[in-house]
Length: 234
Image 1 (spheres, one colour):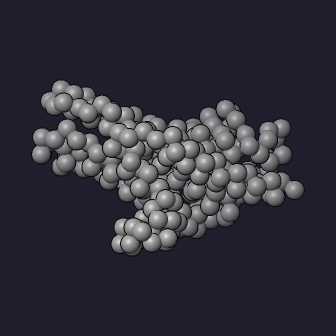
Image 2 (image 1 turned 90 degrees about the vertical axis):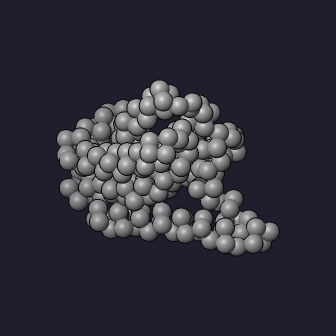
């Protein structure tokens, strides 16, 4: 698993993809931070991180589209599937590589915390909750995008499918607010919503239920990806 993770991490940064992804992320998020925190002299980073998940919604397909689609197109998937490693090691290695790129991007936002600490009074519980929330939610998106990448050899199709899924989840979340909170559909959409649970984490309210939800959803899509690879291995 570690060898696959290193191989894919190096692949991200040997090509322009990793740098473009992180550069685009930082350009957008630094503008948000400047507008929301610096110009208004606010130490509340919640609004910045709330927008961060929307940015990931658009950028995540770019990160995950190549995970398996590129292997299929180049024919290197056969080398992976016949190597003396389990399907779960392949899936886990690629997933950790994608999460590694996310961690690099998030690490580049740590100067925000230093700026807030110097010029304001940071709410540490909220800041820690924001980082935990964005890592959990983006890990779910990464697992979803990787699963969709495992279904096709076209990176473009994988990216479009991922974006459509993420946008559908966002629309479902918006719909849950417009419905009667007492209705069955409204309660179901609210309970299933990634964004609702994300907001709960950002407020500094740690919940094992929300953590288990994110871990379970991530595990589900990793399992589905493993099943796709097992079928291709036969």
